[in-house]
Amino acid sequence: MNVRKFHLNTNRELQLNWLPQRPFLGLWFLSYALHVADAESFIIRTCGQTLSSTTPWALKKRLHLCFGQEAQHAISHEKIYKKAVHQLNWLKGYLFVHRWICYKALPLILNQKILLVVAASLEQMNTKISLWSLEQNSLSQATDSEMRNLMEWHFYEEVEHREVVFDLLERENIPKWQLIVGSSITALNFFFWTTMTAFFMAVTQKIELKGIGLGKLFTLLIQSSFKLCKKDYHPSHEDIRIIDIYYGSNYRNSSVTQPLCRTT
Image 1 (cartoon, rainbow, N blue to C red):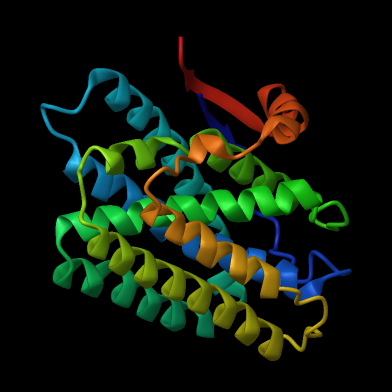
Image 2 (cartoon, rainbow, N blue to C red; image 1 turned 135 degrees about the horizontal axis):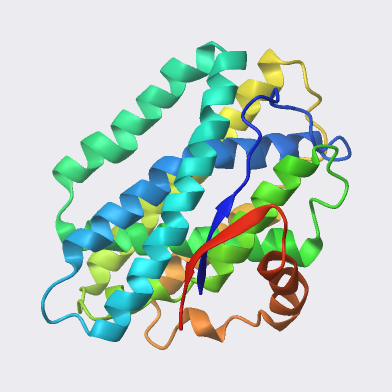
């Protein structure tokens, strides 16, 4: 597992209709990019608070590498956020409300174990979105190569560290009802906010609601979130061989990323 820095040109204007063949899907991915910086920071914070002296050293090492990847994702997506709110004035207040509800208010009323379930469930959905997009090669017709590279880099790394937070969750012996509560909160919040942001961007920018095709993705996200509740499930069961061969070689040798540290 490597920690890589993505080279993002902060001077370029954000291209909103960057996936013209499926414009709404492009907005949905952009919305995902706007929301995911907070999600990544929440995952790092929550998992860090769960670590203890009894956590195995090998798992701690993997978590620190995972945190490194997530931190780079958050940094890059925060730059996308700044571009978006500069171009769309209404977004700043709207995303502030989202941040307050999901990452300020909810952590005050949920206990640490449910918060860890939320973090693991976010990772599950990140992985499923990544697998769904990479397997379909859904960004192949993107007109903004930088946005495509950013999303594919992020997606590949989500697949790469898909097991780490789950392994921490497994050690906590969390009751099934808490797994269900955490998974439900995550799935509904995640899909609602991401989709509504994309919808508002489409309406305000008069971008055609074409190529939505989110029914299957919604089903996959719900299913992936609730896999945490299955007794014999582990993320390593996902078959990622094709993705690892194609995208792995791309991003191990890519000019758009810079390795910062890696496993030995």
